[in-house]
Structures are given as structure tokens and as C-alpha cells.
Image 1 (cartoon, helix red, strand yellow):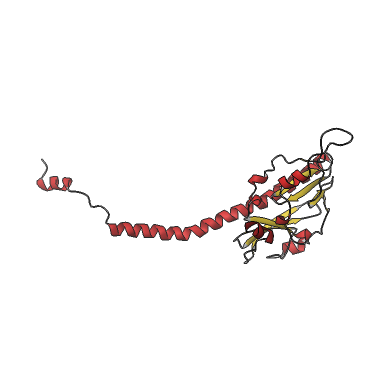
Image 2 (cartoon, one colour):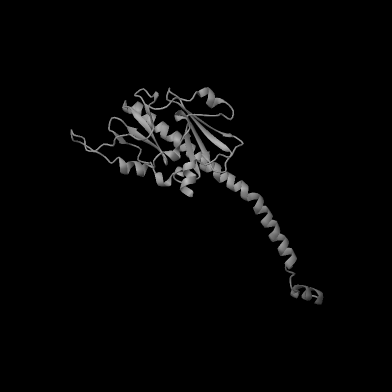
Length: 230
């Protein structure tokens, strides 16, 4: 038989949280979230920056591989929303995975500058859709499939042996690229509010080198971007 003391203990109500205790817990959560938010934002920014750097690297390698395997000249054409692979033999773009609307470069947060063209900003280049509407496929006089004439945008060309030729501009020295916090590179990727920049070195031997460096400077958006926002 249970004692009266035990029965009373079993039937006693449990003590809940007071309003003061709940407010303290909520305050701690808010403070912790405030500390975590910048870290999460920085992490997402870096993910986006690295995605763009990876995009250039994979497209570069795809173009070079095609040039060597097909024994054909293959170009990299630069647009505001990305870079495309163009086969000079078929006179058509051959990168079926190109997705300008899904590219991080299609927005206003990330852009690139072409060091081999004196720092020309991607914001001064046409979007691919704009370029395509002004350069529709043409029917060759000799017949056959329609072709696209690559003009109106900067491009680099891989030769049949995989070496790279700068069709326009001047190659930025690899020595400059190798420096800590380099002042320039063949291609520089920047992002709003991010002090880390990504640098890409196109070598005439057909090799590609990339790296990201904390520059301690938040880049200023190109004037074209500011004009579009206003």
C-alpha cells in the first residue's frame, strides 16, 4: 500500500517555465542567430564565387579537350552571363550544358573582368540571348546545316595541339598571377560585399590556373550595373 506522502507526490502538478525564463531563452537564441547570420552569409557568398570559378575552369577544359580530340580549332567566347565553347570547323556552339538563366553571372551579385583586355567588365558584354537575337544562324551558300558567325564578343582560341591563342588583347603575365594579392590576371571574378576575389590565369600552353585571395577591398560594382539598377 502506498503512503499518503507518495500519493500526494504523484498527484502534484509539475512546475512550468516562467515568463522571465522564456524571455531569457528567446534572448539567447536571438543573440546566437545574430552572430551566426554573417557567417552563413559569407559562406553562401564564397560558395557562389567558387561556383563561377569552377564554371570557367570546366568550360576551359571542355574546349581544350575538344580541340585536341577533334584536331580542330575551338574558341572560348565571353558573354555577360558566361562563357561558351565554339567549334570553328562546324561554326556552331557545342556546349549543350550552357545555361545562361541559371548562371550566377546572370544576376547582379557576381561579375568578371577580362585582364587580357585591360580589365573589360562582363557588364559591358552582351547577354547571350541579346547576342543571339542580333546574330541568328545563317544558311551557308554551299548548303548544309546553319552556322553561327562568332563576332561582336571577345574570344580565345585553342589550336589543334591544345595551345591557346589570344585572338584579342594581351596575355597577362603568369608572374603577376602568382603574386600574393595580385593586381591583375587574365580573368578576375568579383562579388558584391566580398573582399575575396578569384583569379584565373590562361596559359598559352593550354593550361589553366585559378586561385582566390582575400584582397581586403570590397569591389565597386561596374558603372553599367549601377545604371541598370537606377
